[in-house]
Image (cartoon, rainbow, N blue to C red):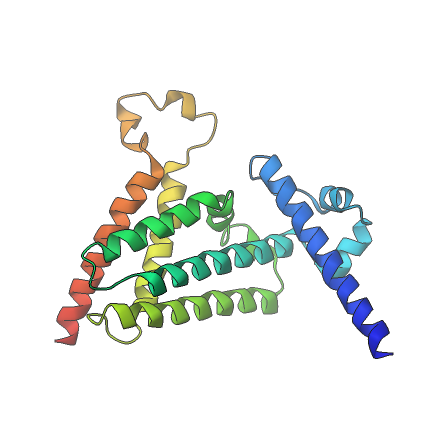
Length: 223
């Protein structure tokens, strides 16, 4: 009986993964627009009703995918912090570059993150929304504590706050610079030139200023 239940559980996990993978594929293929549940069901080879057995809305599917992406990026940052030598004068710069490279390589993450509050969380069950927020907070706290161990200038809890600011800057800058397709051909206009910059180059510069400024302010508060 236990074996039958285990097989059934494995099948459920596999179907759930199939739905998530199908949703991500459609999302990336369609220029990062959220596909319908019907389209996801068709792509996954499952009935629409089956998809609804696992996820109540398409937004729930994509909040799971966003959380998975956030987790992978945090794991990458954690590894980068562990491997880094805090005595290295380029420690901060290397961490910022590692972070921006991970964001760059996770195609579609920024677009998904940018619609978190305005789209995804608007059509979620309250418990699911709270669970998502708690997972993000957990990752920030764990990673923040790890960062504090490498940057003794930071007070306890300051690492998580700094990472929250970094994530907010990452998403906010993307929302500002990622112009709609219909506007992009006009970006050569002199007035619009301020927006015509390379996102990741700007992001690295902004994050470097954020980390150094945050560390300095926090160190003064500690003293």
